[in-house]
Length: 126
Image 1 (tube, rainbow, N blue to C red):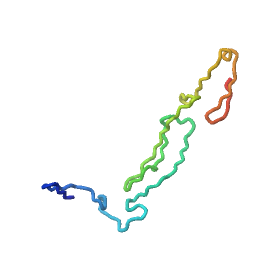
Image 2 (tube, one colour):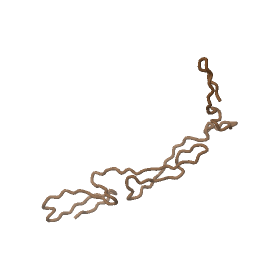
Image 3 (cartoon, rainbow, N blue to C red):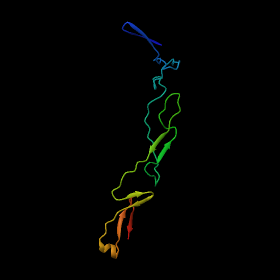
Image 4 (cartoon, rainbow, N blue to C red):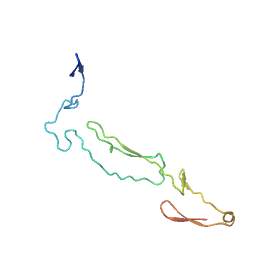
């Protein structure tokens, strides 16, 4: 409880102890790394494997990789896939489509065109 004087009135307020943060315990010596906060800020590089065919809205969940808070279980780190548009290909379900402009002559007599796929390999459309 904390007593606060406001003009001629005195109020009692219940607040969290600034020394122990309501735990009822304090550390005898403060840790030089965490400064008695029990967590250390750290940056971490995470490599994700995005499988072929994953669509927008699919999620990748890394269990127990979220933010760590004292006395609580670590949360999960969740990544949501967001698909970028492509100038040549359009995705519909698991299929890729591309619009190719043909002349009347090519449509009637046939044609052959070499295109480059997303993984940079070339293929021929006839």
